[in-house]
Length: 255
Image 1 (cartoon, rainbow, N blue to C red):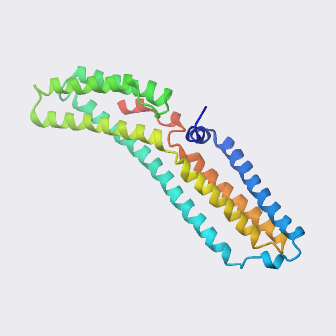
Image 2 (image 1 turned 120 degrees about the horizontal axis):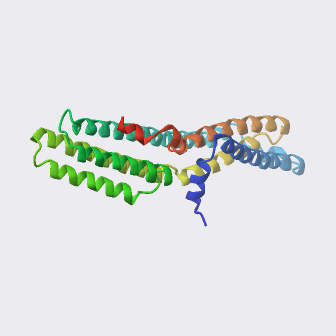
Image 3 (image 1 turned 180 degrees about the horizontal axis):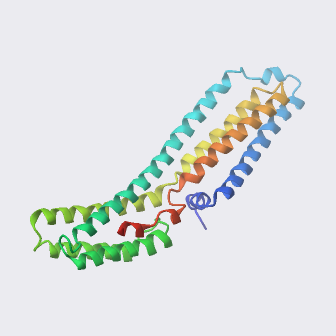
């Protein structure tokens, strides 16, 4: 059985329209519960005024919701930028390594073949098969082979060239670790849960300040539901930075 985190990863890996439908269903549910509460108090309570909160009370809950949503959105976009930066840095390191080991410079075909084997392993295993959520033994072995080859070649390399080669291999290993960490940890389930729950409480707060005006309350709840649904969906479609894997091809690292 899938855990809550795995279900969240699954949902945020779905197509844009499917996610929109899911968030729309959630919005309709929250709208229905909030409107039902409003009408229940309005029709069943003989003294609605005693239950009616002071208007500014709504701002306290909506402010908490706005802050949580803003921080949550900042985390999601930060993960997205980190994933893009790791992809670009990996490509830059591999291209510079390929240039360094090319016939025009060090002429090390063994190292060039090893870095290509690493990229192919990343593409086939970690990128396509595991969606960057799991490390591949094949890719790890290819990276170790690359490191071992550089250690052997460094004995005959000029000092500056050896330093640069080791630095580039280190960059390749670092960007791989960063990519896999983001792939495994991009979804903050508890942050999503907190935002959705506080969003629900915000709907209830709007309903509570309209207990004496159900029609105005229904309009306010409808506008809030549309707004929160769009906000949730716009974050959901970018929560997984590797969702559109076809737009980022590791083979491009080889030039």
